[in-house]
Length: 315
Image (cartoon, rainbow, N blue to C red; front, side):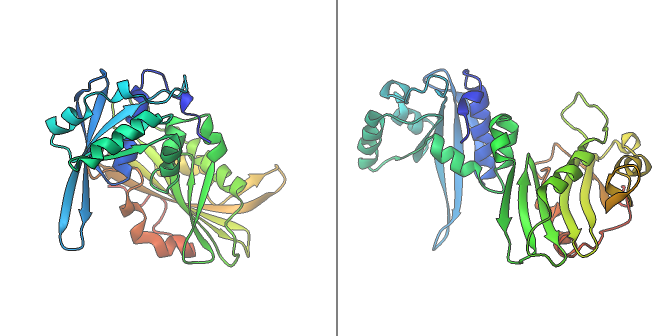
């Protein structure tokens, strides 16, 4: 289970977690001003393709973080929610809490909803954890709960192919495939592959735009005991001159050498397919694991076919 008491008691990190969770769930999210309890509320736009026509619904979201004390959210914590919803023209109110609402709060929700003007919903700690366990949201566990994430190091998802899997590890999303086996590569080996990628020393940045290396897929030729690793080097588009050049990365990763060596021999020969991708990190389109980094190459990830020469796609 996730220990929500890892988050500071001031609630700021909890609010940030819920904001990121809602965004990754596909909602349009905005901060409001200061709420009635001096905390910040969120306004969320829910967009849906209805049976006859698309529609939008606005929700006011209130975050309550009491995991340290373990107390329930009480009536005093939701004073003025009807007026607050009307102030932002919200059709729904969502209470998100790191513990649980009290019975009195749930009764109050039913009373408000029975009047037919505002929809009332809540996410307690159990619901939040459930919503964090999806491919899109799983990385948030590693980002916000470093201690609890040790219990959630891997999450493997089935695909339609018996030798192809989607996976979350830490804050990464990647695909795992095998040549003929009906099981994914040993996760300890994939962890070693990611450790090698993480060992590459990237330029240190104080600003918000940074250099990243993100694993995309690991293909294991179980017949011959070889790996092909696909990864992307993302860098600010105006900083070509500061990137770590392919020859240095090749030296760190020991491209074409064994994943392991004891000095006398090596095993699991590993080839690395690294694409260099310039990106505008201020863009709304930017995401470290954007679908554009996966969809054009799915067959190559599945069959272990390289995308290009090492580092050849530098722009």
